[in-house]
Image (cartoon, rainbow over all chains, first blue to last red; front, side):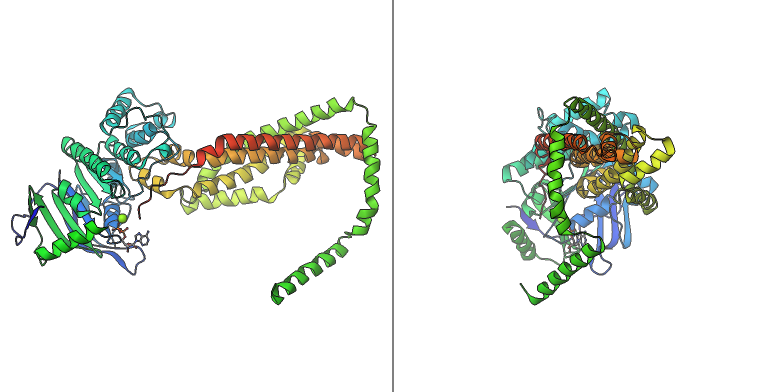
Length: 276
Length: 261
Ligand SMILES: Nc1ncnc2c1ncn2[C@@H]1O[C@H](COP(=O)(O)OP(=O)(O)O)[C@@H](O)[C@H]1O
Ligand SMILES: [Mg+2]
C-alpha cells in the first residue's frame, strides 16, 4: 500500500514551457441545461502518463472528447500544443493525426481485417490513390508489422476485427493509435472490462510505448489502483469537477491542489472505486 | 375484443364493400369466370412444344435486361447514396440529392418504360433504361438508409484521426454497410426480373412482349406457357438468392460487442 502524503501546494510550479495540454475554467454541456464539466483546470506536461479517475457519469469521457476536438467547451479555453481543438479549426485539423484517441467503445471497423484497421492510423500520410486501392507503401507495411508484433497480434493480421476477443480488440485499437505516430494518446477506460492479468498486460504495453515514443498518455480509468500503479499524475473527477490532482513519485503520493481533502477522504474514494 | 375495435373493423369492412361496388369488383363474376381457367389450361396443353425454346429464349433476354439494369442502376446509385446520407454530408448536399431520388422513385418502372419508348423507340433498350432508373431510386434509398444506420463509434473514432472523406468512406462506410448491399442487390435483381417481364406490355422488350401479343390474338394457351416460364424462373431466382444470402450474408453479420457501461 502506497503511503499518502499531503502537502500544501508545494512542489508544483505553473511556470513551464512544456505544457502540451492546457485547460482553463472549462465548462461544457450536452443539453445547454446541465453541465457535464464545471470549471475544469488542467495543465499537462509533455511526456506525462496522466490518469483521470472517477465514477460513472462524472465527466471523464467528456473531458477526452474536448481534448480531441469532438466537442467544444461552452466556456473556457483549451489548448493542445497551443492550438484550440475544434474539428472546424484548420490548424487543429492538420494536427489531428498526432492525437491517438481510443474511445470507450474502441471504434474498430468490424468487417475489415486487423491489418486494415491498423493501417487506418497511417491514412493521413497516404495519398488518395494509395488509400483507395489499399496500395500501402512498403515502409508503412513494415511499420504496421512492427507495431502488430509489439502489441502481440502477430499471425492475426488477416483476421476480421469482429472475430477477436475483447483483449485482442483493445490491442488493435492501441496499434491503430500507435500507427498514427502520435504525440498524445487519449484512452478511455480501455482496460476497465478486462480481467486483472490482461488489463496489466495492456497497461504495460502502453506504458512501454509511452516511454519509448515520449508520448503524453492521458488515460481514463475506473479503478484508482490501476491509475496509481501506472500514472505519474492522477486527477480525480467528481460530478464534473476536478476534486483532486495528485502526483505519484515512487511510493509517495502528493496532492497538487490547494488540498481541502484529507487522507481519509482520499482513502474513502479509493475504497469506493475498488469496490466496483 | 373491445367495442372500439369492433367499430374500426366494421368501418373497414364497409369501406371494402363500397370500394368494390365503385370499381365493379364482383365476387360472383369471379366464381363464374373460374371455368374459363380450365379452358386456358386445356389450350395450354395443346400448345406445340416448339414454343418452349422460344419462351425460354425470351425469358433469357428478360433476365439479361434485368441484369444490366440492376448492375448499371446500382453502380449509379452507390455514389448517389454517399451524397444522400445525413451522417456524411451537410444539409446542402443531402437534401437536393434525396429530393432527386424521391422524384425518381415516384414513377413505377412501366411509366419509365413508356417515357423511354418515346425517347429511344420500341425495344429492349427502353426497358433496360427503365430498370436502371427504377434501380437507382430504390437501391440509393436502401443504401443511404443502411449508411445512416452504421455504428457511429468507428465513424467518430476514424474521423478524429483526421482522415479525408474519401478515406472514411473506403475504410469505414463501405465495409460497415456492404453486408446490406449484397442482400439489396439480390433483392433488386429478383424484383427487376419480375418487372422486366411486364415491360413488354408497353413495347419495351422482354418476355412480356410475347405475352401481350398472344393475348391480343386470343392465343391464351401460348400466353399461359410463357407466363409459366416467368413463374418458374422467378421461383428459381428466389431460391438461388436465398442460398446466396444464407452463405454470404448471415455469416458476416455478427456484430462486434464492445460497449462499456
Ligand atoms: N451524448 C450525450 N448526450 C447527453 N448527455 C450526455 C452524453 N454523453 C454524456 N452525457 C452526460 O454527461 C455526463 C458525463 O458523462 P461522461 O463524460 O460520459 O461520464 P464518464 O465517462 O465519466 O462516465 C453524464 O451526466 C452523462 O449523462
Ligand atoms: Mg465514460
